[in-house]
Image 1 (cartoon, helix red, strand yellow):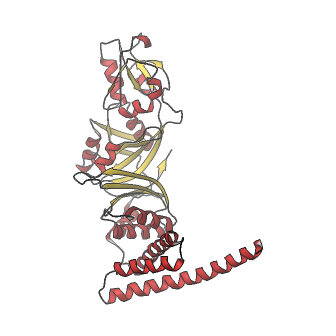
Image 2 (cartoon, one colour):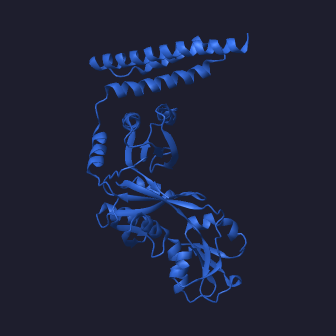
Image 3 (cartoon, one colour):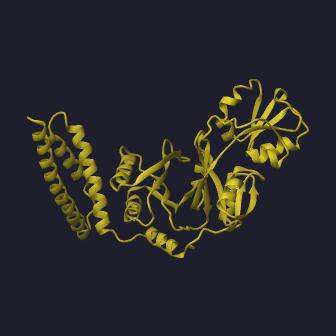
Length: 379
């Protein structure tokens, strides 16, 4: 058979499949409405048998591929059914209210909670987000969440992930314990420097203080200082302040250029991070949802039933709607063996009908579902 003949036959089959697909989708909606009218739930046993028939009809060697095709058809059909028959959810109403009630401009001035002390990267991120940030410093990441929950501050700024060291796991764990909404995010270029008191030489250093993320991001440099103790502290700015206030001449901090200037420290080695393009992504959180114009990112958290294919179904639904998934993170659930909370970042305009449809689908598919906010990111 000639190449053009093969291509023509494939085009003919695609046309037939497209027509059959449209018929199947219409019938799936009729089926859903008929079941709802009779008060019937989905026939999972019947669906399983239909899938087996579909696989058998495909013939030997194609059963597995046919199973994937059928599962995708079912997921797409369920999404379409829901879009045609679903009543607007309370979450959709909440998002609509947020869109209507949120100011057209991101606030220039606000009270902001940050973990650490003056010079912390969170403070630098806050200054990038707000023209006039009135910052309250707290000792821990949990303190930021608590300050928002109790109304002590309007917003909080927290590091979420780093391009070198990965996710800040503690933040994801705290997300499960607090109610909050992400209102904006910012990417900040991060530099780490070996800082010490004036007059101290590099060869004198016996102990280095820094945050665990900065330590992870500067692993190659730290290998050049064998025998030096590395001590984790709450924050890179705290590390710099600790060195500045110490009487010791054998300690140094991994911290920023800004902290070196702020605390009067000398730079013994500059830009010691493993990668030059070292960025940390910070989120700005508030107590209530605020969706500012231009929001094109959405974050959600969810848990799934502990059965095969549960995560695949969510992923296929996102794919079917043509929505880009930019981050997937999992964290173990407390007191539940080998079960996880999943965190998703989705790239989609908050004004898109597909966005509302996906949220409705996820609410129905997941064991638990939390909408964390829609926002834009500045760089």
